[in-house]
Amino acid sequence: MDKKKVEVYRKRLLAKHAELLRSVTKSEQDGREADEEATQDIVDKAANSYTKEFLFHQSDENRRVLQLIGEALERIKAGTYGECVACGEEVQQKRLEAVPWARHCIECQEKQDQGEL
Ligand SMILES: [Zn+2]
Image (cartoon, rainbow, N blue to C red; front, top):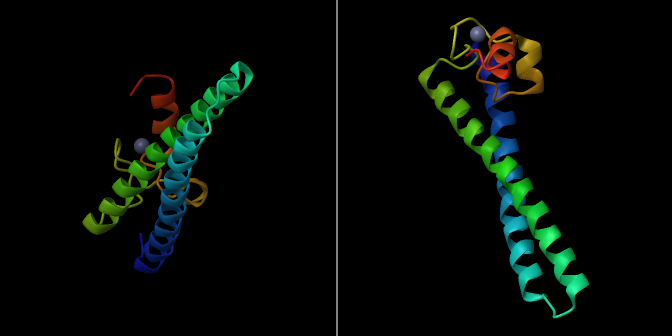
């Protein structure tokens, strides 16, 4: 992939990384605050644990993407960014546009989704 394109994706990855990091930190804070606000009221308690679960789930997903972004940045350093990690073919531009941290091309992703990879 040409360097200018890689640089565009690198900037996007870094921006997304910063955004997710902020949101993970924030939801951890919200989780703690929800704890501190806990009262004896059973309804409040239920709502509180629901909120916490939601926040934790959300931050799990964010962490997963953070990890993938970290790997994508490593691939940029290694000069292999944009190649499918499974078959070595170029990942489709459209796919990278939508998911710049994608590890697989569309074909391999489909195989992986079906448990064949
Ligand atoms: Zn592939």
